[in-house]
Length: 640
Ligand code: NAD
Image: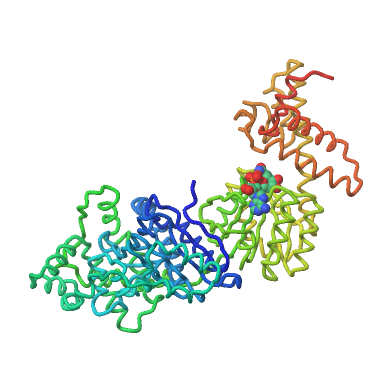
């Protein structure tokens, strides 16, 4: 899948580019999270002087929020996804509006709804010939959100009411007049402008590139807008328009006739409330969230989406008419939410977790942590889209601000390289938790470096495989300081069903390789016994029935029987697709041999098992098969 967004740093600039031109760069939940994570990282990164946000494609900077999933979940009676999306999106909008460094946005084509939330709250908002900006939410039964009521409340005169209720589109000049944009820069010169910003990190060059936009419509309409949109209630506005026969009034009335009456009535009320004090972004978002939190249940939102996007019949059945929106319905949508109130804390209860290595194991482990409410910042050299996990551009970035950094990497050399980047980026007292299976020496070396940097270092390799990683039923074997284990205990409980503290650093890895040495040896013994039984004419089921309840029993026989059709379901019943791949078993057996070498331990069975799996994986056809595929191997062999 092509990534939806590109986040990186170039020169002095934090760079965010929306990369979904085929869907007009519609803003997905994951994109919101990624923007939020990047901005939080760059906030404290001295190398980043400013942020530049742009988008690929001519048609749109961002035509709105990606509401397909919101609709699907809402229709099914699940309002949680939509609420979470809106909540996290609004927090990101506030972050842009309050950002301590310049945020430059370049908005070509359509910039609507969710797009306004990313493009119109920064400090330097650039528009061009094709810009078309609008808050069209009243057309789908929502209200102008993403901080839209803040911008609308500050627009001159009654322009905010007009733009919010009619969803009128603004070209460059109109957008600057209404306070949605600051600078008009012809699009042909944007590449040079961006290049300058990236190289210099200095926004002072921007005004030099500005020219005067072609005149818009709003200046001329301002008087009529103020005369018609100043009413207290929706009915007042409608009656004023009805009383006038100007082209403007007729057109506006027609538009209001199409939009959702409850949305328009609430929008008016919100703008009036905003202007009652000094408008501010948090107040606006908090008020908007009152509506959106209730939108699926009590407003025309789902019906609006159905008519506009799903059935495309464009004949929504609104709950009210423009003349009959009861005040009580408006107040009900805008009543305070109590405990559900939008707040601007990053995470009320969860931790910030950096997760590095999002492969077969790491991906589902990270997803489980995110699902449990933790904020997970993920990084992998091969970009991975994991549900609920915010991708970052580097391991160091994933570690920024993290309470715990978890690594799930292929081997000790990679772990050492990643650790050298991550440890300096972490704050003292944080936990460095390696869950990969690596050599004991690398585990201890990394733990020593981490401890020196004031971190709590744990090695916690796992057993349970990919199935256990997805189901959250892994077993963790942990080495390292007890206070580290205590701090990470909640995370072990989410990702696994059992965790054993095995002693100081490296002992987790020691336990893991000893366990897997036994596993390799017993699997080989079980497979060779089945092959012998075959040749002796002993039925496999009879063999299983005896051994699984006699002294030859083991996990390999009882829980993971290598003979197809015998015992519980196992990879043998699935053509020996892993499961636990033979090459991973080989890796662990070799780690055991390496460790045995270091401490001069005699391990004849372990040595044989390592040799056999080596032969199976490297010289025969074992690569890509489950480690229990030793059974068909033995079946075809004779005594040599
Ligand atoms: P994997 O190859 O699927 O995942 C490893 C991930 O690390 C990959 O996505 C890779 O792109 C990424 N990576 C590599 N170098 C990186 C770097 N420098 N920075 C960031 N990311 C990098 O492997 P896996 O099956 O997920 O196994 C991960 C670890 O878990 C291994 O140590 C393995 O031995 C252990 N383990 C695996 C299983 C299993 O059944 N797969 C079971 C227990 C333990």
